[in-house]
Amino acid sequence: MSFALRNLCVLAYANGFTLWHYKAGADALDNVSEQGFFADAADMLSAGDMIMISAQDGGRIAGVAVAQGKPTLTDIHL
Image (cartoon, rainbow, N blue to C red):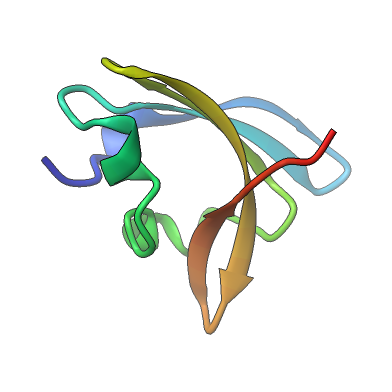
């Protein structure tokens, strides 16, 4: 499968930060984590946002980085 905008939703927003949720459907977590997967949402995602991803094979919380106008997922270090 590929990115589906209808599966991306805002959970919280404050002070320019957005917490998102993405339901991956049939996509595996590794597919969703590939560079460019969220390119169609580039106008919505900002650097520093976080995305909670639910996939059939697990879940992940990732940070958003933006390089050359394209969002990419980054690891969150606790």
